[in-house]
Length: 295
Length: 197
Image (cartoon, rainbow over all chains, first blue to last red; front, top):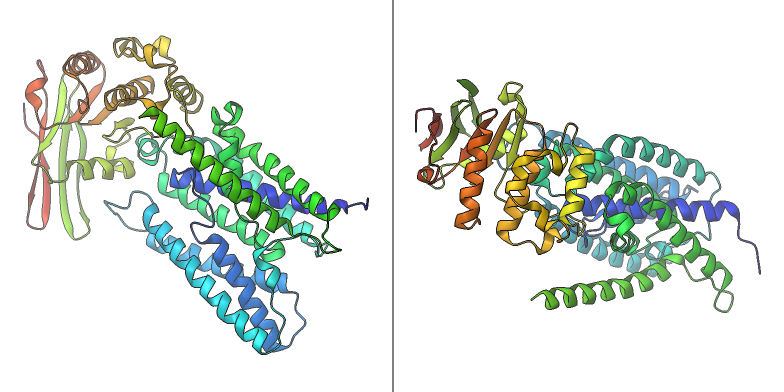
């Protein structure tokens, strides 16, 4: 058996951890265990950055690295959204005591459809004009990586540790429901905004460098909460959950590396999509059965 | 007597003039017609605690408690004890005994009835440190016996703490001689004035 590069394992582990935490944060903010970064359009925003980057590289003819341009564009979008959110959060609002999650979900779903349409159009044009297109975007993989990417991931990890140390208690109380948390004096809107931007940032970093790994952010937190150890204390999900998610993605990537198909390696993102979709159906059926038994 | 909020401000082109007063030793109320904005004011004060003049206020609203994780009552109580500084455990809360929360300990919050959920929310509030307890229709979803229990608890609590209740029917509160703040809406403005029950 060939040996897998340790750096590749480390990056898969960190990305798995980031996506798991990203999922936990969106589920806490939306108070919905089926919430995920993709529902809110985070995956789509990062994917749009990749598509636009490829467009810029092709049009300018410059030999820029796709992931660097993509991350740069994503950070510009991130900062823009951050400034907009700061402007809209000013002033007294009797109804907007927290973010209107239903509106955010609708915007996210709409944005997903929009990016899907853009993707199809750009893909068609690129193929017609014989340009390279980042077809690997929708199925993330760790096959091609720049070793310096690890520094970006470690920097993101440092920000994450600082953020969680600061906000874990408030997130745990927010998981009881936003109105209840507000009644305890938790600054719900601020905590939600920070959580969403951290989730967005983590998703963007992973997708810019490695592509999309569907369902990880949705399924792993949901499955963790089915275990008493994680369910009884949200802080365990926030701190230990990403380690579990990281191991899951690292193992998935290792298996993809070892078991190729006629020399072609399966992208780990493809495996996470198939496995994740299957597990989601199982979870939904189990949950429906539980509700049926209650009635 | 204690002025809880005395302020005038504009919200979405609506002039809000509040002169909300409360006192210890009796129950205080905020009353007004349906749709006048009592719950909206309640929510507004939750967000803008700077208007409460440094008072430590715990709010109990109408909505059901819905934790993200499928927690039991015991786990929620443990969470509050661990994460809310100064909170008590159930054994240290004599009022919680009267709510009979112990019988619900192993039940999942998601499986509680409306009345049980309401009792749990009240019990959680009583475990936390506060100077003022502000409740939005606390008797909602409760059966007659539970309503009498909650009223009795609030009347006993009001001897040492300030209790302010949004309520439509204040007649249920037997010995409630306290402040009755009235909220009225006119074109372009909302006013809260204080009076007696």
